[in-house]
Image (cartoon, rainbow, N blue to C red; front, side):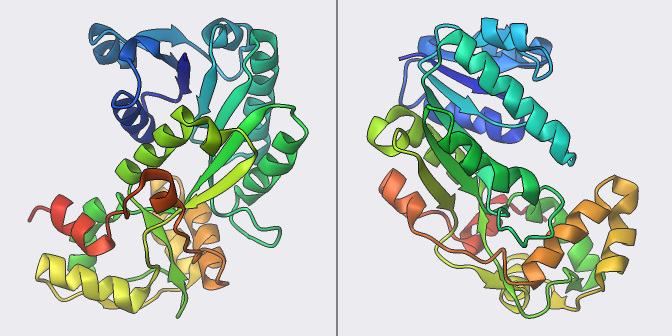
Length: 286
């Protein structure tokens, strides 16, 4: 079986390459990337690296040709129409290249009433795939736990978690656990070929009081919960380029739309996901 991974040089993509290499020969793993120079370490390690641009269908056709299973990791953009265009281009390239099996990486914010700016894309995916004639599975991630680690010093300085979600809970998964589940779905036809839709989460979700208590235990610093308004949150992080987008996501969380919990990870991998306390303790360094 030949596996091709798009977005393979990103944080999640690199994790998928690593986890897939535990289950399949690296000679059968191809990396389809926009900037091959960013994958030089993979090329030196013996992986096949090919140029592939979501806006250049011929480049994707070339990169996808000979592929049995495509693991589609989308680009990082907050533009719904561009993300849909990228996916439609990829579907066209898959058809021309003769790819039959797809593992699509998605996100939990896909409800029709979800105000997150990218929810329209995630809602579009399952309906679009249902009419695609592909054998596929959709793997939805919950919120990544990973960004919480570099965020901890700021929270310690503030003394509070400030997410504007009120008394609602949010669900998380680590990128490492996500990558492991995606790789397992890719190599097991019974997990991937019947239009399955999975949601990867830890065993529990966390309201912000619970999350701040875990952070206090891990860091040894007092961290409480004092939410700011959505507008204030957007203003705080707008300079970093995604303040409004993040605020729209936390608006969804405040509506109770980001708290789903499943045992899908365990059913896919055969073991439980890492919990939040253990994840933060393992990765946080004072």
